[in-house]
Amino acid sequence: MVYAQLLAEGLRPGMRARIIEVSPRRIRFETYGEEHVLAPVAAANLSAVPLSPAQKVEVQYEPLSALKVGEKATVIGISQACRGPQRRRLLDLGIVPGTMVEAELKSPSGDPTGYRVRGAMIALRRDQAELIDVNRVLGGSA
Image 1: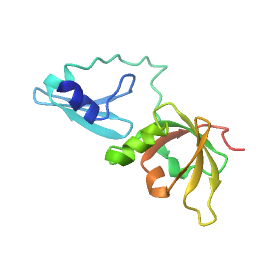
Image 2: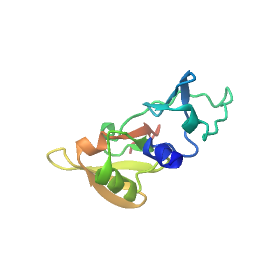
Image 3: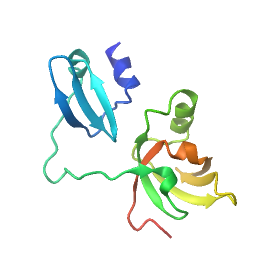
Image 4: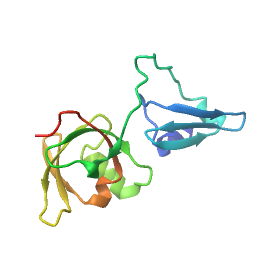
C-alpha cells in the first residue's frame, strides 16, 4: 500500500529532492518542480542522502516544447498533470528521466514536432511536449 502511494506520487530511486517542511503531521518536499506531501508513515519508507556542496547545482528545467530544431535535452521528468494512458504512452516511448531527446523536425504548421528518442523518431503535439520537463544540453544545437 505504501509503495503504491509512493509510485502514485511519481517518486522513484535516484530523484533529487528539496525538503520544504517537516512536521509531525506531514513531510513537504519538491522534486523537479513538483511539490509532494507525504504522511510521516509513508515518508519513513524513503531514504535520503544529502548532496555534497559540489553536487548542489540548481537544475534549470523547461518544457520539451521549448527546444528548437537541432537542440538536445535530457529528460528530467513528466509533469504530475500527465496521467493515465497519455503518461503510459510517453513512458512506453522511452520518455524517462535521463533520456536524451533531440528536436529534429517541425511540421509546416509548427505542430507536431518530431523528436529523436532512443534512436526512434516520435511526433508530439505541443500540449504533450509541454508536460515533459527537460534540461537543455549546452552546445546541443546543430
